[in-house]
Length: 129
Image (spheres, rainbow, N blue to C red):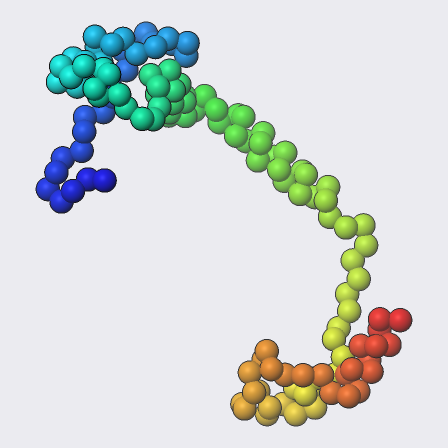
């Protein structure tokens, strides 16, 4: 956590040319953090390879290198969404409610509290058979 008035630590310097399988050069790490020995300044978190990969990803996004792939993913998601639609849709209206019988009941009773009338309950039973 950063305390009020304290400045955050400097960012981790990633050596140029660091690939996915290369490690942080301990001399450059020490010099980038004020000469502190690597063992004393061991950072918990991403490695140089991870940071390099992330930088490459951000650069590629900025250049539009992944636009076609993102469009294809979106197109595929839309296609799959339509593949999961049910084959048959049954539309069923609820039975008669208190609001159908007395339109002014909404002035004294909230929508969630409007109940079915005895006739509405019977209609629901019949619809379920």
